[in-house]
Image (cartoon, rainbow, N blue to C red; front, side, top):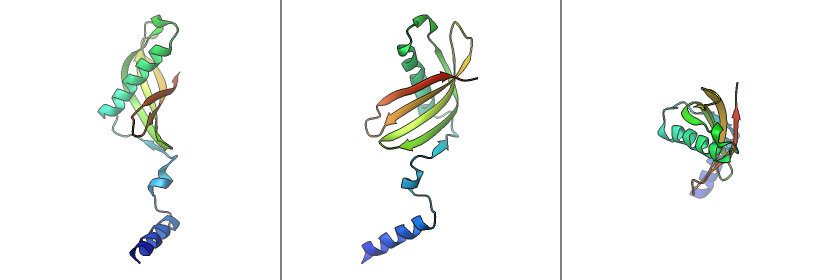
Length: 118
């Protein structure tokens, strides 16, 4: 009997438009605490990963900081859009957008994209 009541409550809450974990999947959420060590470390990791992909190692970037970030819960993990500042010998300070996917459970990271922004 109590299982039926819980199921009924869950169905009613979903029908009323309440936010559930399932409805949050796919929605981008602004990250407000940019000083969070995890966010800054993800930005640093993205720059290192991009440097490994560069054919011209003289164009390597030096990480400065993340100045904006969003996250999206996706199947199997979380995607992060990190707006960051990095420098190189070619460009004193440049702004970039890195998309990083972090797999749930294993915390395996993948640099999906890394592009300069204007």
